[in-house]
Length: 103
Image 1 (cartoon, rainbow, N blue to C red):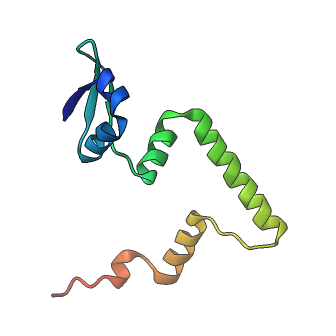
Image 2 (image 1 turned 45 degrees about the vertical axis):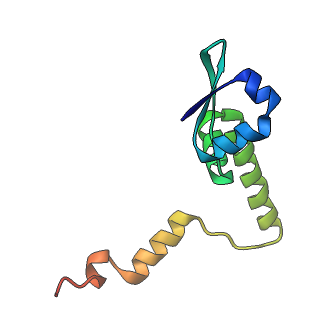
């Protein structure tokens, strides 16, 4: 983890961003921490938004509903993960029935 002043961030943002890609950077103002810069992947960003922003969660739910409605209008058959799991369990039986315990 590295410390950098806001002044350095303003004068050389590309350098500080490169440093953040290598590890967390604590941004300070007058010697006091005010922010942390951290490298993040698109997947991590999505997870962060889902956990921290209720509005984003609602937008995602609405997008899911719209997509499912679109599929229904096009008469595309959709199965939920729960339904697929139930069908697989019914077809395969319980896990104990197809996992061998013999060496």
